[in-house]
Length: 162
Image 1: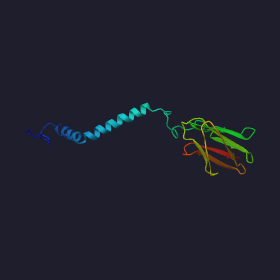
Image 2 (image 1 turned 180 degrees about the horizontal axis):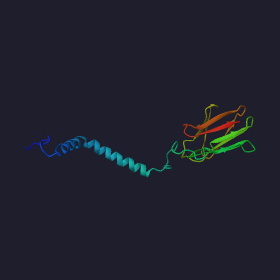
Image 3 (image 1 turned 120 degrees about the horizontal axis):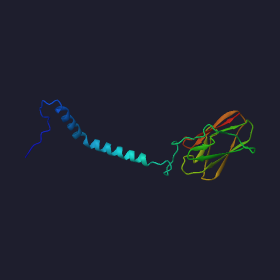
Image 4 (image 1 turned 45 degrees about the vertical axis):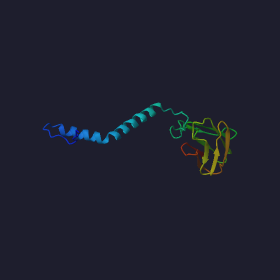
């Protein structure tokens, strides 16, 4: 029976010890290196094939692009706010103190976490069914800033009462 000797051979060659050390390291850690390499390949493949609209929530992945756009109520005191994959649009509303205002929320996609709207200061939460309008009456008796957000707090908006 032949025995294998894993001890480094004595050599006067300057590169002999590092190669032996490298071989020993690779031999001892080959399983971890293999698993790490496979995980890296899977991760890169997943990222390359990822699509924002692949049937999962995109909440927090994309921010509203019209965050600086400000809306005002129409002559009847209504503001239509759309909830879609990018959040709430418009996300900023200005109203005049004492003006009766109704926000009308309409969710247009299932590709969003904005399936409800929450007004933390008012302690109001409303479910937003797909393609249905949900009205929220705003108190505008004092100058203030009210916020609204999706149920997860990822998409936000504000109402400034002047």
